[in-house]
Every structure is written in structure tokens, then in C-alpha cells.
Image 1 (cartoon, rainbow, N blue to C red):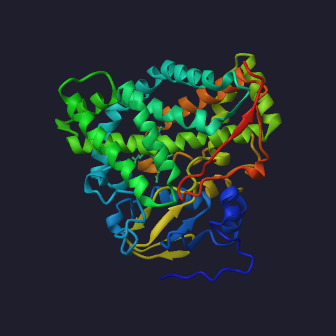
Image 2: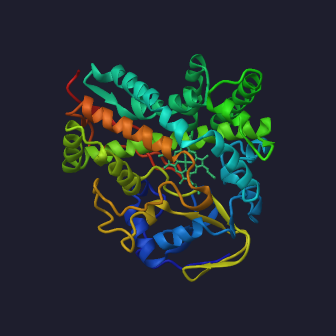
Image 3: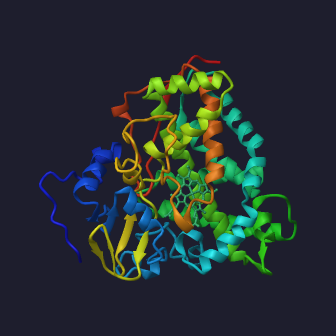
Length: 415
Ligand code: HEM
């Protein structure tokens, strides 16, 4: 296995301080060890890629496979590199775990159903959900914006879009809560939640096949390409990955984004006055900047070398896991002007928050819509919103791929 003897002042990765603010450690890695072999908290060893140019290259490199079967080590067999419960073969056939040509075929089919137009038509519904959630706490003068706002919005939105009946959506909320709460802890709870969701979705797809509607699941069943359709298993795995990939990410974009605004009063005031004047342009660049500055996905999902390759002078062997550190790349001074400054009006901002290449986030239009609605609406309805805890007292969730707050307590004048 490769080794990179660390200089003495190497920052400690994956510590408590690191979870609260990993950016200084990534700055150090960019400078001293841009492609760095490390041991993750799970015991799995992997390369971390932290510079923007290398990250972009790695995300688009066909020699880096997404299929965990390409990994020569024990990590996959012991179930430690993927979504919990993924050893369940039926769940393996989702976009984030496969390469062309299977990926090309599945992605084309899902793109026919999950279109930007479908997302745009969904906007009034997202606004309604946002308002309903704010109504739930606006009269109280205080709230936890993760628990009461950022967490439920994406789960209800995706359930609605997929066509999960309203009376079953609270089950999804509970399963999703279990998945988030047990992250990094005992695996039984997560695996159980994944299994329940999976069983529910398989059953729903079966029922919808007999009675197609206008929802996304019906769209997935209907989608065809040169006479090809998704099988029932593929449609269930697809619905599951849309939920799984689109849920915690969006929670974190809204949560991290609001936290960044609450701790940068001048930037927040600028956005608030633009919104009050009916100008929504700044909201668009603001959400992109929040994705760059403190995005939800700290590390892109796993990749494995299928051929020996060299990245920034490092030899990567066949089977080695490679983790592209989006949070490091998006603060790289070689690409971004004053990268550690939050500038909501930033124009030159080709961030990697949604990835890059063939696995670029298929849910990006929905995520943008939800974040713009959520952040825009809450700043307008609760204009004197402020943090009700010292930033150093807030706890960050210790997942590996994602970066997000456990809670975001706020105070405001009750409506
Ligand atoms: C892929 C980020 C929301 C569905 C990705 C990737 C990133 C990402 C970085 C690429 C991962 C890699 O290459 O390893 C985000 C962020 C979101 C978000 C930051 C919210 C702010 C969503 C939503 C959905 C979604 C709302 C669906 C409803 C997917 C899917 C893929 C993906 C299915 C896999 C695409 C493929 O492999 O072809 N996302 N995502 N994401 N995302 Fe998102």
C-alpha cells in the first residue's frame, strides 16, 4: 500500500474540531499533500483529492469506477463503503454505483422522467410546503430550523414528486430521521429504515403500474428509450436513490446555508434588502455561493481505480479507493478569488458542489428550487431571525460524505 510520511504539523483529520471546521485541514492538504493516502474512521484506507483541478479531473476520469466490485480490498465485502444495506443486490443497480454502458442507459431513462420541466412545474407545491412548515413555528418566536424546516421540506417534496400518497409521507419522514440519526452509529437502525423504504417503494411501483398517474414514479415506469424500459427492480432502485441522494443533501444545503447567512450579517442584510425590493437575482447566485462555501457534500461518493494512474504526481494502484474532496476543491485559491470569503454575488463560480462529469447531480434543479424557496421565504417572513446559540456550541453530524448541522436554534419576533 502507498505511504506518504506526514510532516509534523499535519492537521488531525476526522476529529471533533475537524467536523466543526474541516477547511483549515483541507487547505493544508491542498498545499502539502494534494493527493493524500489516509485511514478513514471506519478503518478503510483511501486517497483524498483536495485541489480543484485534480478533483475535476478525477470526477471525469473513466479509469475511476463507481462500481464497488472494482475495489480489491476488504472494505466493500465488509459493507463499509456504500449505502448501508447495499449488499442487497437489488439496491446495487443505482446510478451512483455503476459505470457506462449501464449508467448511460439508466441515466437516459431517468432523465426522460425527471425533467427540468417537471421540476419547474413543481415550484408552487414547494412554496406551499415551505409556507406550511414556517406556519408551524412562526407564532412561537423560536425554532430549531434543522428539525422543523430543513429536515422535513426535502423529504415531503421528494415524496410528493415521486407520488407517495400524503397519508404515507410521515412514515418516510420517520425512516429518513432514523437514517440521519443513526449515521456513524449502530448500523441496525439505518439498515432497517433502508429496508422499509425499499419494500414500500417496490410495493408502490407495483400498484402504480396498474394505475399510472402524472407523478415521477409513473414517469419512471413509462420512460422508454429505443423500446427499452426500466425493470420493476430498476425503477425501485431509482426511486430509492432519488430519495437517498436528494434528501440529506438538501437538508444540509438549507441548514448550512442559513447558518452561513446568520453568521455573515452584512451578506445576509444585502440579500434581505434585494428580496424586499422584489429582486430575486441575488438569491440565485447566493445559493450557488452557499453550495461552494459550505456545501452539503464534503466528499464525493466512492471511486475505485480500474487501471494504474497518476494524479498530481501520486501513483494510484488498481483497486485503490479515491475520495474527491469537494469541500477542499471549492475553497482552492488556484481557482476561486478569495475562496474563504462568502460573497453572495460571486459570478465566477464553477463550484463542484453538484459534482462533475457523467455522475453530475441529476437532482440539481430540484435542489436549487427548494433552497431558493426555503431561504428566500424564511428571510422574508422572519426578517429579524437570529442564532439562539453560540456557533461553537452547535454540533455537526459526523458522517463522512455529508456535512451538516445537527440542530440550528433560532429566535425571531413571532408573527
Ligand atoms: C449525484 C450533490 C440534491 C439525486 C450527486 C453528486 C453530487 C450531488 C456531488 C455526484 C456524486 C459523485 O459523483 O460521486 C447534491 C447536492 C444536493 C443534491 C449538493 C442538494 C443540495 C439531489 C436531489 C436529488 C439528487 C434533490 C434527487 C431528487 C442525485 C442522483 C445522483 C446525484 C440520482 C447520481 C447521478 C449519477 O450517478 O448519474 N449529487 N445532490 N441529488 N444526485 Fe445529487
